[in-house]
Length: 125
Image 1 (tube, rainbow, N blue to C red):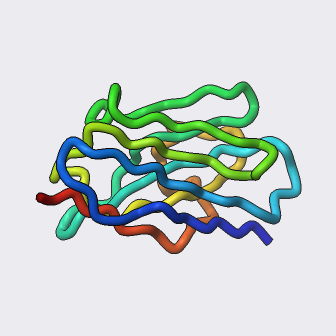
Image 2: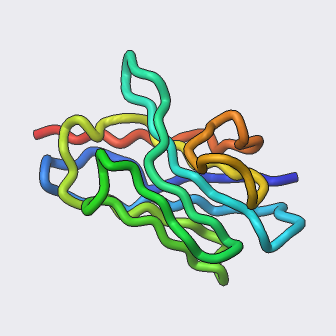
């Protein structure tokens, strides 16, 4: 059974950085897609970034492009989300999720069938 565990959230000042981790276990295939999503208070959950293990391609939402970077450490079965130049509007619960390697947009949440418990990121002075 696939399990995803996020960590690395916390309180950071505007302009600061955090690195979120998503440790995965239980994959029966080397091919999968991992997505990072976030949900701010009173807002719908939205896609932030995703990684496709089939070809190593990554996708990043326009709202965080140039500030957030997704990466993978295969040896540690972990996908990271490096978040730099954080803004108060980045405050949200961040989730990682997994799905089969192929699908439609990697931000289509309906295609993800395993989710982590979420980690809170608060950007405030």
